[in-house]
Image (cartoon, rainbow, N blue to C red; front, side, top):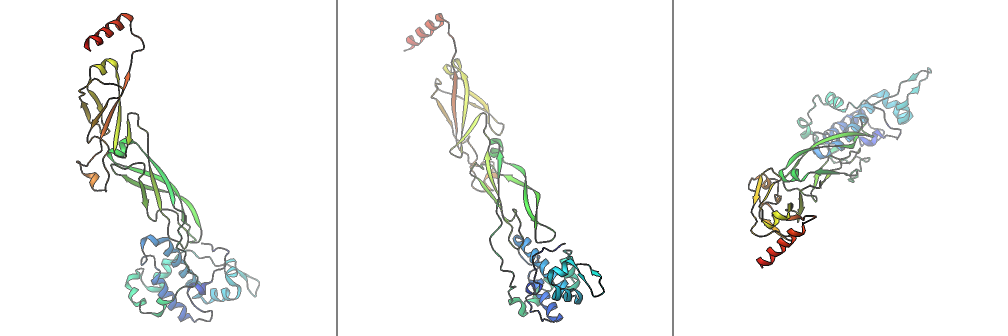
Length: 330
């Protein structure tokens, strides 16, 4: 791992003065590495705690080594990183932290489990020490906002959807970020609509020293060729018929969004303004993740409207017959 060109103050990281002893370095590292170990911190702060933990381990690796410490004290971070020319004119290779903080911790503590040692640390005065260079901003990196298109069938029946998205993650140097593709399976519950917004905490961008941002998914509803969703939970179905079917009040037969066959009787002559309401055949009403799993979940209503195709031409003789029929009926 290559350190950045920015000056890194290892003494600040360990909250120590420059004239500290090796015992002070070891004690500070012991207490602070236990306090900020990623396994001890909450999962949502994993990236931030890993970043600080690695900083502590890097600082300890340098300051606990007399040769590295001497070079660092005399030539600073740049001299340590780039290497120096000794008195014999030979170039000493620069120091590169390999990101092996957990190995350093295990070697120092004799265990990789911080919980077996955490109680001891809590008695020490270092637990009250605030690391000066860790005035951590609570500002999150920018959230990731994504649109997820769903068909009306998927929103009616529920389904699983997989999304892939780009996010910034902390690189192996624990100081910079790189872009990677992430993948997430999302359960779409029955009754979700175009106003549904799903928040996935900590699944967004990462940034050194900060909490991971969130992934925010906005449900988008695809247009359906037969049904239209209205009033959130109601459906409109437009049934196409010809004039003869309208005059004969022919029953309406069609498939629902979950594949059932409906046969709706009509008890009046159908006109362009006719609307047939079928209670309980609209969209499932989402209240929570449990209620929509119920087979008897409440639903909105279905409104059947009619698109009547009138004939483009009627024989004059037929027109007279139809007119006479209608007038006689009056």
